[in-house]
Image (tube, rainbow, N blue to C red; front, top):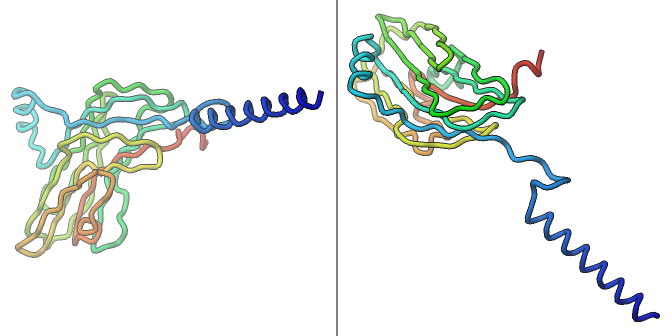
Length: 211
């Protein structure tokens, strides 16, 4: 009888250990949190005709990209234009919210566009559902500019920021450019620039949940 009880105890112990291992190997099962949704951004290759149309519109700097993936029901895609001046930490100039709640993206074309006229910079954030426009004053003593745009592929989720392009301006005659690299880290040279315009994307909580 004692042997039977010991055998049952060993079997229960083995079963408990097996369940513990399975839970560690399968974190998405009951008792664990669901993985976050993610979006993949790819450079958009414009046709010759499309490029000709863009050129005739008179946009100085632009970044076109496609988005694939699906947002969770409580998430929204946020596109922003941030302006940095002399290491001030950056100030939001234009923000657009897209895909509020279980949005599915299938090669959805988006864009950031910048047109400069005298001492004013005009911004446009474009998406399949429309566009948002804004503007800001630029320092009057800027002599030159360097632009670096998105030309690769990156996947991100909520809590991460993707930096797709930047424009640096300086009152000096010489400037050095820095590649964005993994697109999730903004170079210090851009943050500390005399003047910089940065286009970025992030996934945030749906604004409806905050009302």
